[in-house]
Length: 275
Image (spheres, rainbow, N blue to C red):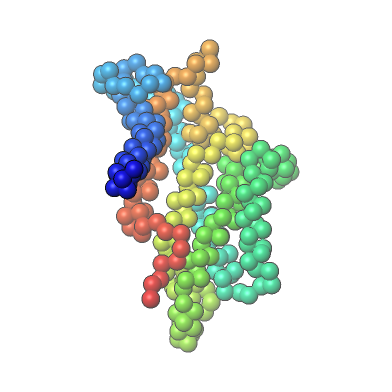
C-alpha cells in the first residue's frame, strides 16, 4: 500500500475513533442537560417538548434545599480543613529534614488509597461512636478530612518545594518570625496550589455517598448525594423527572466554582514559580 494512503487512512481512523469517544462521553451530559426540560423524561436523551414543571416539582420537594445546604456545610468545612492542614503539613515536610520523610509521605498516600470505603467504615464508626460524634456533621467532616489529607499534602508539597528558600531567608533578615514567613511569603506563592486542592477536596466530598449515609441517621442532616437515592417510587422505579432535575441543579455549584477558580488561578499539579 502506498505510504501516503496508509498515513491518510491511519489519520482518518484516529479521527473517527476520537469522534466516537467524544460521542460516548457526551451522551450522559446530553441526558443531564435535556431531560430536566422534557415533559415525560426517561432514560433516553430526547427533547420532545420544553417544560419547567420538573423544576417546580423539585422546588416543592421538602428534602431538596436542606440537603443542598447540608452538602455545602460538609463540603465547605472539609475543603477548608483540608487546605489549612495540608498547607501546614506540606510546609513542614518540605522545609524540615526528617529521616524517612519521603517514605512516610508515600506510605500515608498508599494507605489512604488502600484503606478506603467499606473497609474503613467499621473502625471509623466505632471510633466516632466512642467519641459521641455519630449523627453529627462535624464527625463526617473530620472523617472526610482525614481521608483526603494524605493526597492533599502530597499535592501541596510540590508547590511548597518550588518556593525558593531565598524568599524566606530575606524575610528573616528583616526580622520576620516563622509564622509571618509562612503567612506573608509562602502561602501567597502557593495560593494556586491551595485553590486546586480546595476545589479537588470539595468535589470529593460533594459527591460522597457512603460516609454520610453510614454516619448520619437523621434524614434532615443528610447531604444531597444521599437524598438523591430517595427519588424512587414504591415499586423501586426511579423518578426521572426529579433525578434529572436535581442532578442538574446539584452539579451547578461545583461547575461554577471550577470555572471561577480556573479563571483566577488556573489548575496545575506542580509548583508555579518559573525562573
